[in-house]
Image 1 (cartoon, rainbow, N blue to C red):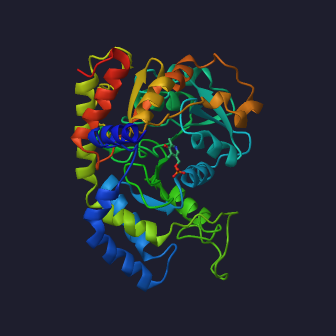
Image 2: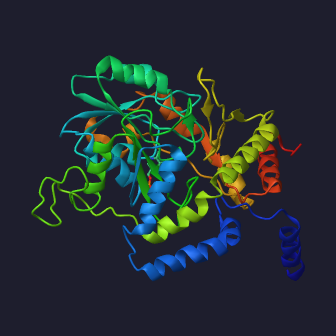
Image 3: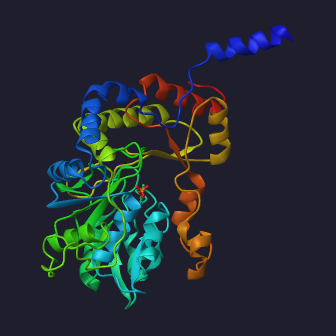
Amino acid sequence: MLSQVQTATDRTDAGPPPVPFFSQARTFDALWPVLERRLSDVVSHGKYSHGRTVAELEAALAAWTGAARVVGVNSGTDALVLLLRACGLEPGDEVLVPAFTFVASASAVTLARGRPVFTDIDPVTYGMDVDSAAAAVTDRTRIVQPVHLFCQLADMAGVRALAARHRLTVLEDSAEAVGMRWDGVHAGLLGAGGVLSFFPTKTLGAIGDAGAVLTNDERIADTVAALRHHGRAGRTIDNFPGISNATVLAGVNSKMDDIQAAVLLAKLAGLDAQIARRAELAARYTELLRPCSGVRRLPTVVDRGVPTRAVFYVYLIEVDRRDELAEHLAAQGIGTETYYPVPLHLQPSFAHLGYREGQFPNAEAACRRTLALPLYPDLADAAVDTVCAAIRTFYDGRSA
Ligand SMILES: *Cc1c(COP(=O)(O)O)cnc(C)c1O
């Protein structure tokens, strides 16, 4: 009995260390001197929400993305809701949203009193399928809202042509798309506006929730700035000079915390290096996984006919027996995620819209087959090797 326990312990000690799905402990260790200074500055300036650190972050992000205006809010989801409202969505207006995405892409539409209308996706990029979107246009369609998932932009040439044909506003759910560019233009600035999420696991992550709207449209930016702060009049919509703190819209409390802004400012300085490290790790995965039975698709950055910049937020593969593979990896201490297990047209929260299984085959297949592997700047090359060896062993019974 004792010797069995001993053997088990020995085997664990000899095996490779576990690979969590996400960690940024090393990033924060290296960043600590800068972070400590910034956090103590917030503590001493004493305006913990919507203060000058938030303003500094908005300016820094505007410079980094090239946006005329960045408006900080308290999540990527709120950024979407407020952006939809600022674009003048009326109750019952229809918004085209792909069926394979994070649920917030569509619940934001419901929260803004619009009606999400789902489209299928392109099976290679997982972005909105423009033909499917065109087929879903009605005389109530007001906005087309592509989502940029995992490592690259949706087909923005196709989306913009569709929008021009039907006089639709283009809003981008660019929550995952920090650093991604289309012909030099940052994601979120290819239509009326876009959003960023600073959820901790995102490419630029805070230590809690935060988000932002980015736009080149001053009126949209001013409206979002008012909405996030109880509808208080901002710079150009203040037509009530006699009333202090005039509220001109029914707003919400979606102010950004200065602590989050301080963390994001500290991390922004190293963001390009972190993005480059993500690309290296992704290339290593691709090299090691290319000839592997059971792995049906690796991330493929497509040629859009214009220069684009991909950013690996998530390394997503398509595999046979996905759930079994995830369990096999978990048993060896390797974390994975399923982005996204249920297509939105089949989510109970959208059942009232009346969609059926089979309507969006590419979205449904992606939900069944895709698996996200660990990918973050703190990940060591050896950890990628460990993950790939475990995947090979699962399908081929050996690691080489
Ligand atoms: C993360 C994410 C959001 C929501 O952002 P939060 O900051 O978590 O509210 C919305 N859409 C997509 C595609 C996302 O990945």
